[in-house]
Image (cartoon, rainbow, N blue to C red; front, side, top):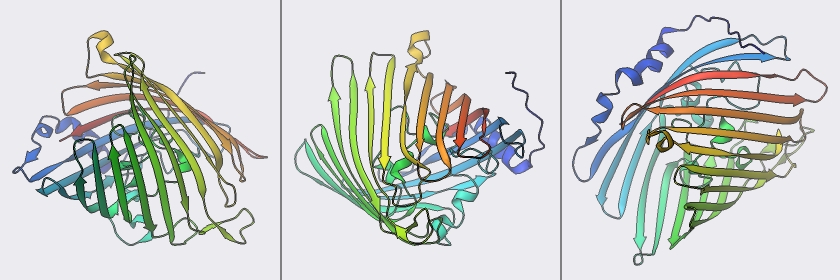
Length: 375
């Protein structure tokens, strides 16, 4: 099949932000360490994606751009205390608002995502928290965190599939869909590190869900760091759930979400790593996918004498839940080209397919380029 993409006139603001990382790549080196307690950093990112879709006659091929600016402030009054502030600004929503697929093509915090966050009326303030660490020798510590938090910073991590700015773009290769991770609302975290083990617990109160309900979300995870002759690896098991705030398939009662997720990453050699994620959730509430399975490879550029570069390959299969979706598939491949220590360009190709019960089923390609400057 030949990929033919129709031209689309783009608004100036998204294009400007999409180009910003290229223009500011040299300036990105100027990360500000004001003193030994205060540090300013963040990122500027832009992406341009085009889709060609078949199977749904009302959806046209399209191209869209979007940009992100996320400044961060770290303040460390003591070696055991930390204050953190993160803002998020976006221009455009890329393909996320026009794509017919159940999975988001770029899982970044775009223009709509940073406004009226979780129905709270708060915009642009993504994180604001305080953390204190209790140390019990070299092998043990407990960190307590409270404030406006992002749980994905603490749980469901993965060395090769966890960052929509430097790794895969599609949401299924960033976090487990069935972990139903909220973000950017009030909560608390406890992280206990004990040698190669990490035990994490997170609780949040979230403004509103899609059913207009305030709800509580909680998760607990066990993480084991393993070092073998192959290299380093991480093996995680997570349980997560919510209060009863999500409509059931009949729309008559509110039910909780409950699920279990596994996230593994393992070096296979000095240049190849592999990842695997699996998750399952109950179907008391209306759910799009009751199970998801994703995995893939990371190939480091040292293989061709470009150590800063890498290739990512991923495949995901999602089993439909009690809604309209029978199953979903996604494939993504990217090449990340490191211009320097601060600026990178990524070329990206995705293929997605949703199979819908008794309805048109979208299938198609998304190609894109992403530029990210971290400072």
